[in-house]
Amino acid sequence: MTKQLNVVSALLTDLYQITMAYAYWRSGKHQEESTFDLFFRKNPFGGEYTLFAGLEDCLKFVQNYKFQTSDIDYLRETLPTHIEKEFYDFLSTLDLNDIKIYAIPEVTTNAARFRAAVGSNKKFYEFGLRDAQGSDGGLSASKYCYLGGFDGTSNVLAGKLYGITLRGTHSYAYVSSYGNLDELKIRDLSDRITGESRPFVQLCLNYLNELGPILKIFPDQANKGELTAFIAYAISFPSGFLALIDTYDVLKSGVPNFLAVALALHQCNYQAIGLRLDSGDLAYLSLEIRANFVEVARKFNVSHIERLDIVASGDINEETLLSLESQEHAIDIFDIGAHLVTCQKQPALGCVYKLVELNGTARIKVSQDIEKLMIPGRKNLYRFYDGNGEALCDLMTESDEPEPIAGVRMLCRHPFSETKRAYVTPTTVQCMYKLYWANGQIQQALPTWQEVRIYVQRQIETLRKDHRRQLNPTPYKVSVTDHLYSFFHRLWIKSIPIGELA
Image (cartoon, rainbow, N blue to C red; front, side):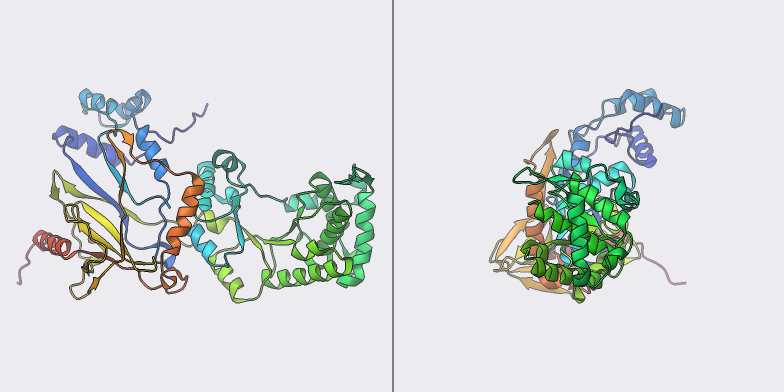
C-alpha cells in the first residue's frame, strides 16, 4: 500500500542538509547562532517586480517541524553506519522554536503579469489543474493565482479550502458525445417565473430557423449534435448556460446554436451567461461574435444578448494577451491554464540561500562573477515613497544602523558600482521586514486570502508604470547605505587572495 506523503515532513529537504547537520553536531557547531538570507538575483519574466507568496505555508511548516520516529528509522538505514546514536537522539528532539523568520509581507508574479497585460475591466480565471505538476502543484497554483489577481478557479478543492470563486463550462467531449436531438430524454423546460412547462427543444429549433437570414447561414449547416448538447446543458443549468462553441464551425454552427438556445432561455425567463472560444483567431472571432450579438439583440429586442460574455481559453500566454490588446477584440474573460500554472516562460526563480552571519560575525561568499556576489551580515530593508505614494527605491542598511527618516536626505548607493549613487529624500519610509516567527510562535496576525489579494493589488499600484510595463521596464533600484557599502566592500577585498605576477 502506498503511504500518503506528509508534506510537513522534516525529510522534505536535500540530503546535504542532513549530512551537514551531522558534521556541525560532531564538531560542536550546532548551537551557534546563524543568519541566512533567502533571495534571488533577477526578477522573473524580464520584469522589475516579484510578488512573494507562501508565507503561511512556510509558517505552518516551521510550526509542525519534527523528525518522526519513522524518519529517524529511515535515516539510520540510509546514512553511514558509523553515525552515533546520540546524533539521532538530537534529531528526535529538534524543533524550530528558537529560530526567527523575517519576511516581506505575502504577495504572487506570473498571475499578476497576466492580469496587468489587459484592461482592468477584464476577468481572469485559472484553469490549470490538469497542467499542474501534481495535485499539490495544482492546489498551490489556484491559491497563488487568486492572490495575484485572478478572479476564480476551476479547481473545486481550492474553492472549498480557500473560498475562491469557482468557474467552469463543459468540454469538447461533452459536445461530441451527442449525435442528434433524438437523444434528448428531457425536452421541456419550466418557466422560471410562472412554472409553466415550455417545449424547449421546439423553441430552440424555431429560433435557429429565424437566425438563419440574420447570421447569413443555412440552419442545416448548424451541427445538430452540438445543438443537442447545448440544449441538454441549458435544461440542466438554465441560469448558468455558458457554452463551448468551437467543437465544429464557430460562425456557422457554434454561434447559431448558442444563440438559438439563449433566445429560447430568454422566452422561459432565464438569461444565458455567454460562450467560450478555445481555438482559432480569438481577436477576429470575438469581434464577429460581438457583432452577431448586437444584431440579434436588436432584431429580437432582447438587450442582454448584446452584453453576453465572450470567454477565451486555450494556449494563452502573456504574449498572446499583449497581442490581443494591440489589436481590437471583444473578449470579456480569459480562462488560462498551462502557461500560467507551470510558468513556461520561466519555470524557476533561481533562489539563493546563503549564510550571511555566524555568532555576530558577517560571512561572505566571494565570486569572480560580480552578479553572484552577496551582501554579508544581518540587514534591514526600507522602501522610500514620494509624495504621490509611488515607490522611489529600496534601501538596505546594516541591522544596527538607525532607521531612515521621512523628509531627510539619504545617500543611496549601488551595491557594487562605485560611481552609481544618488541622494534621495523620501516623503514616506516603510520598513519592509516583519518578524513572523520567534519563540516558537507566529508573531503576526495572518491576513485572510481576500485581504492578501487586495494588498497585492495595492502594492503593485505603488510602482511607477514604467517599472510595471511588460516590455523593457525601467530598472527598479535596490540600494545600500554608504556605511553598508563600505563595510561589505572591505570584507569582500579582504576575502580575495592577492595574486602574484610570474
